[in-house]
Length: 277
Length: 288
Image (cartoon, rainbow over all chains, first blue to last red):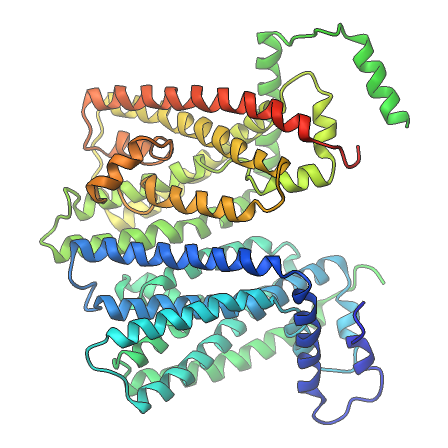
């Protein structure tokens, strides 16, 4: 165990403002843990590089045969590719590890330890595990995004940038909501790891703007696997094609998603019967 | 210690130069395949979700290239929206045939000593992988048919193979399976010599993605890439089986493609044989 034992933080009565302290503490422990395995950083860097290179080669092949993809030019698609890596990196850094841990906990019955702590269980279950090295995806993704933005003909305004940061944050929260709802299914069906496979598989479609896809796929990619919101909307914002309707729709969807997630979480934890302990 | 004793006595019961007969191999493969078919059908829901998740990748490629084909007046490099659909739908089956024992799995095999148990068996361990994965393929093909049906309804493929093409395809997907099994085994065996294998595997898979016809049909690649691919085994495991069914392909090209597969199977088998000898010498059992 590391010197900073997360359990000790919640041993006493919970204080106001402690809700943010616990995730931060877990983050620190996670970072310290990962810093022990520095070689993994090199491996992750290579993986990121290979992924970005393949994405760029795919784009080069596309633009060998055409000048635009459904109205999207090459620099705009580079922005989308960059954002795809940023969001993918955030998922790998914070969302995927926590959801994997949650699923394992439910299966093994060790979820008891989460429920018995005097902090909000959803918060604790969502911020326990962090994979530091996946942030290389985020860093490289930001680099690619900037490279794409620089090539845009019409430059960048402050408004676009603000919209972009807001849209990205909202998008990542949405991915978290939907992933948590799906993971909560583990309270009923126990074996949910294949759903995780399904989700990661579908996420790949985020490499291109969802507006390229036919309606049925576009709707799936927007509302079920919200890469539409997480990747396309921020990219739209940067490339100046974001409309007001889109912004309102995004905010409404965010509020609904947060509420539904909370509700499903409550139902799920009620349904949970400890397997051991 | 008793476990070791039992192994020792069983080995002692057999003549030292025990060589399994052909019939023993056929029985072994039959049993492995039957067991694995029964096992995998139990997890049909998990298998299904896995296969559906996998469909996102070709659908992305397909949609992008159909869009381009339509924007370019209906055709890109000889492919229409319909032939792209056929290419990427057949792709899904070929991709599934391409799933074999992962090179990443060797680390666990070595670390947990599973290999030690396999080493005392009279049959080369590769047969166990080949047999059980082949059984899984039977399940995969059965589960794939409805998926292909749905994809065909959505994307309207143009598919008009001759009888010869169908036969060649049926053979070629198993050839692809064998080639990929052998080459990934070869790659996985690097784990015996170094623990930093992830980087090598990633580079291999990236090369494979680009040079096999998985990302786009090889005909759409620049000339020099196509030439480079001719000297590598990747296309035999992916692009060739698909094109065998989807076309355009001549009778001669079919025969040449199948012979090329045979060539890669022989190369792979010989390489595995030699690499295995070296690898086992390097192997130190962790447990038993």
